[in-house]
Figure (cartoon, rainbow, N blue to C red):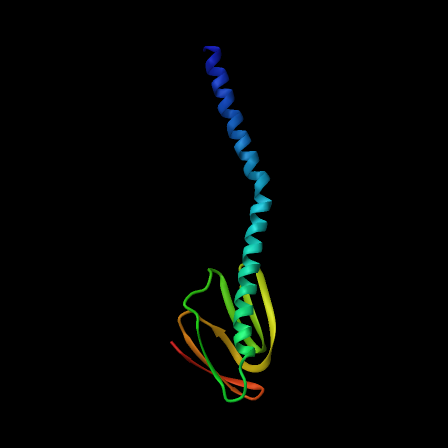
Length: 125
Protein backbone atom coordinates (compact mmCIF):
# COMPACT_ATOMS: atom_id res chain seq x y z
CA UNK A 1 0.00 0.00 0.00
CA UNK A 2 1.46 3.40 -0.96
CA UNK A 3 2.47 5.93 1.70
CA UNK A 4 -0.10 8.43 0.42
CA UNK A 5 -2.93 6.03 1.32
CA UNK A 6 -1.66 5.82 4.91
CA UNK A 7 -1.37 9.59 5.23
CA UNK A 8 -4.84 10.08 3.75
CA UNK A 9 -6.36 7.58 6.19
CA UNK A 10 -4.46 9.20 9.04
CA UNK A 11 -5.73 12.67 8.00
CA UNK A 12 -9.35 11.48 7.95
CA UNK A 13 -8.90 9.79 11.33
CA UNK A 14 -7.41 12.97 12.81
CA UNK A 15 -10.28 15.00 11.34
CA UNK A 16 -12.86 12.65 12.89
CA UNK A 17 -11.20 12.76 16.32
CA UNK A 18 -10.92 16.59 16.18
CA UNK A 19 -14.60 16.87 15.23
CA UNK A 20 -15.67 14.67 18.13
CA UNK A 21 -13.47 16.60 20.56
CA UNK A 22 -15.00 19.87 19.35
CA UNK A 23 -18.52 18.57 19.98
CA UNK A 24 -17.53 17.37 23.46
CA UNK A 25 -15.86 20.71 24.23
CA UNK A 26 -18.86 22.79 23.06
CA UNK A 27 -21.58 20.70 24.73
CA UNK A 28 -21.52 22.52 28.12
CA UNK A 29 -21.84 25.94 26.52
CA UNK A 30 -24.63 24.77 24.21
CA UNK A 31 -26.60 23.25 27.08
CA UNK A 32 -26.04 26.45 29.06
CA UNK A 33 -27.46 28.43 26.16
CA UNK A 34 -30.57 26.21 26.21
CA UNK A 35 -30.98 26.85 29.95
CA UNK A 36 -30.63 30.60 29.41
CA UNK A 37 -33.22 30.46 26.63
CA UNK A 38 -35.68 28.58 28.88
CA UNK A 39 -35.17 31.09 31.70
CA UNK A 40 -35.67 34.05 29.34
CA UNK A 41 -38.89 32.57 27.92
CA UNK A 42 -40.23 31.84 31.40
CA UNK A 43 -39.46 35.35 32.70
CA UNK A 44 -40.84 37.10 29.60
CA UNK A 45 -44.17 35.29 29.74
CA UNK A 46 -44.50 35.76 33.51
CA UNK A 47 -43.63 39.49 33.34
CA UNK A 48 -46.13 40.19 30.57
CA UNK A 49 -49.03 38.29 32.10
CA UNK A 50 -48.39 39.59 35.62
CA UNK A 51 -48.27 43.19 34.34
CA UNK A 52 -51.69 42.71 32.76
CA UNK A 53 -53.14 41.13 35.90
CA UNK A 54 -51.65 43.81 38.18
CA UNK A 55 -53.39 46.49 36.10
CA UNK A 56 -56.81 45.10 37.04
CA UNK A 57 -58.89 47.23 39.42
CA UNK A 58 -62.35 46.72 40.91
CA UNK A 59 -64.99 46.65 38.17
CA UNK A 60 -62.49 45.97 35.36
CA UNK A 61 -62.20 42.84 33.29
CA UNK A 62 -59.35 41.53 31.17
CA UNK A 63 -59.61 39.14 28.24
CA UNK A 64 -56.51 36.96 27.76
CA UNK A 65 -55.78 34.51 24.97
CA UNK A 66 -52.42 32.96 24.14
CA UNK A 67 -52.15 31.71 20.58
CA UNK A 68 -49.15 29.51 21.37
CA UNK A 69 -46.47 28.78 23.94
CA UNK A 70 -42.90 27.58 23.48
CA UNK A 71 -42.70 23.76 23.63
CA UNK A 72 -42.55 22.47 27.20
CA UNK A 73 -43.99 25.67 28.71
CA UNK A 74 -46.88 25.71 31.17
CA UNK A 75 -48.60 28.56 32.98
CA UNK A 76 -50.26 27.92 36.33
CA UNK A 77 -52.06 30.36 38.61
CA UNK A 78 -52.51 29.27 42.22
CA UNK A 79 -54.33 31.79 44.40
CA UNK A 80 -51.98 34.81 44.38
CA UNK A 81 -49.01 33.19 42.57
CA UNK A 82 -48.31 33.03 38.85
CA UNK A 83 -45.94 30.18 37.95
CA UNK A 84 -44.44 29.80 34.48
CA UNK A 85 -42.37 26.68 33.79
CA UNK A 86 -40.37 26.56 30.57
CA UNK A 87 -38.06 23.60 30.08
CA UNK A 88 -35.74 23.47 33.08
CA UNK A 89 -36.48 27.03 34.24
CA UNK A 90 -39.37 28.38 36.27
CA UNK A 91 -40.49 31.84 37.33
CA UNK A 92 -42.91 32.60 40.14
CA UNK A 93 -44.48 36.03 40.62
CA UNK A 94 -46.86 36.96 43.41
CA UNK A 95 -49.97 38.88 42.38
CA UNK A 96 -51.99 41.43 44.36
CA UNK A 97 -55.19 39.53 43.49
CA UNK A 98 -56.47 36.15 44.61
CA UNK A 99 -57.38 34.14 41.53
CA UNK A 100 -58.92 30.65 41.50
CA UNK A 101 -56.42 27.88 40.63
CA UNK A 102 -56.01 27.75 36.89
CA UNK A 103 -53.79 26.21 34.24
CA UNK A 104 -53.68 28.39 31.13
CA UNK A 105 -53.95 26.52 27.84
CA UNK A 106 -53.02 28.04 24.46
CA UNK A 107 -56.00 28.81 22.26
CA UNK A 108 -58.45 29.21 25.16
CA UNK A 109 -59.90 32.62 26.05
CA UNK A 110 -59.88 33.64 29.72
CA UNK A 111 -61.80 36.58 31.12
CA UNK A 112 -60.52 37.87 34.46
CA UNK A 113 -63.09 40.06 36.25
CA UNK A 114 -61.80 41.97 39.29
CA UNK A 115 -63.94 42.24 42.43
CA UNK A 116 -61.66 44.15 44.78
CA UNK A 117 -58.90 41.83 46.02
CA UNK A 118 -60.14 38.76 44.14
CA UNK A 119 -60.72 37.97 40.49
CA UNK A 120 -63.19 35.59 38.93
CA UNK A 121 -62.15 33.70 35.82
CA UNK A 122 -64.34 32.40 33.05
CA UNK A 123 -62.91 30.23 30.32
CA UNK A 124 -64.09 29.53 26.80
CA UNK A 125 -62.33 27.30 24.31
